[in-house]
Amino acid sequence: MLLEPDEFAELVLDVVERIPPGRVMSYGDVAELLGRGGPRQVGRVMALWGGGVPWWRVIRADGGPPPGHEARALERYRAEGTPLRADGTRVDMARARWDGVG
Image 1 (cartoon, helix red, strand yellow):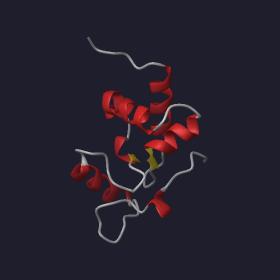
Image 2 (tube, helix red, strand yellow):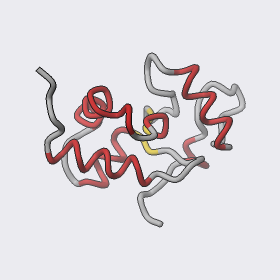
Image 3 (cartoon, one colour):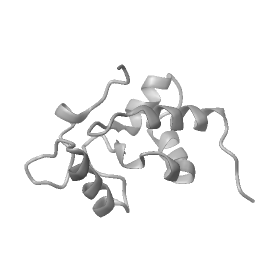
Image 4 (cartoon, rainbow, N blue to C red):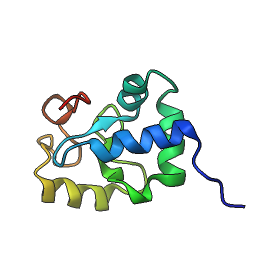
């Protein structure tokens, strides 16, 4: 049985679609912007329905790419000019974090 996204999922996906290229939000940032849910709930939405939105722009708070998709995400970051940390394996959250405005 294929689940349809509920209202919360639709809100999460809408936020993710608005994250500009080269910018990111953590799972917790998305939940905080919506004022509901938490990082795990956002992660579940992304796991179930995130394939149709720029999923690589939602990451762990430490700048780590989505688990299981690290190589693909890093390719996207480089293509979009997303600021990376010196080791090149994580996003520089101080420079790349999007606040949901503008």
